[in-house]
Length: 382
Image (cartoon, rainbow, N blue to C red; front, top):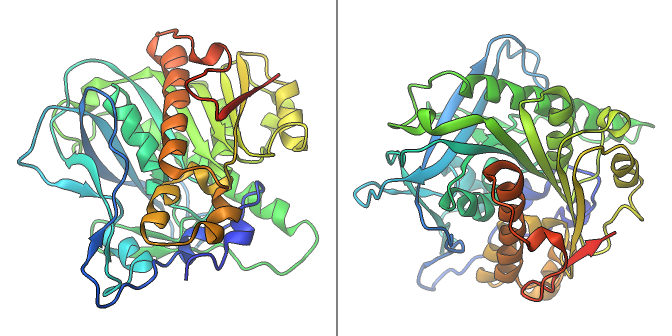
């Protein structure tokens, strides 16, 4: 059912598995219930479109027989009102069938974004998003939609064969090709290094492609991207990907890691641009040597926060969706902590938006200056 792999997934050292093992419980005989994502709070309507991108300069790192690296990315952006266009589904049909088998009694969420809506005019900062190891680009949709509703263009990336399932426009499905553990010494470190290198290369390729017009983008979207103001957010291994990408590509000017262990050469080289660390309850640099090492070599603005009563998977949409499916709180506590899911989303949205506003949007604000009575769940660490 749900938590077959949760004991692995809650670790801050990234491990594949969780999303592929999520199954919604059956409600057979009951009326169908649709799960819902929190509504974004910004003033803008949202559009979204998926991009199929092919990197012909390298083979797939997980399946070398595939001579090119194929990726799916998704662009979320402030849009003109377009009620005639359909709301985009939360996940692709194949991934939806994986986690919500037919006849379960549930319908997966629709997003708040209209598929292919024309963009609002203007030049807008860009935020890249990388999910956790073994997770999919849609895992942080609640935060992604919030940023888009406040004027950012967000590009989420599926890391093929690292994600449990990636569906391409022609119906082909790429499943995880991460090798099963054998227990060999150093195996986990080598696996993480391989995944990190693949993810950084994926991200830089996506950024390269965004730097030139894309025919698949709806009217006005490409012209609205201000790639001179590009940031990156990642959860778990996606957070390490954000930091390592910043080291290797100066086009990324600010980054945030949501509860992921750090790895890569950035641990010794450091960064001279803004970086945010957000940990779950009990995860901080006092207990994570990788965070301590990374913190010591940061030369730009830096901030460490901790979300009280949260768990490693509190930084995903599952924190609000699984309780709607009737999963008992005690079955979720190891992976998600005890924080209320919608409140967790609200707090994360506020601080990630404030970080983007300060370092990409040119709006200072005061939320990042110290603890806030409005958000007592967020702890500032010295």
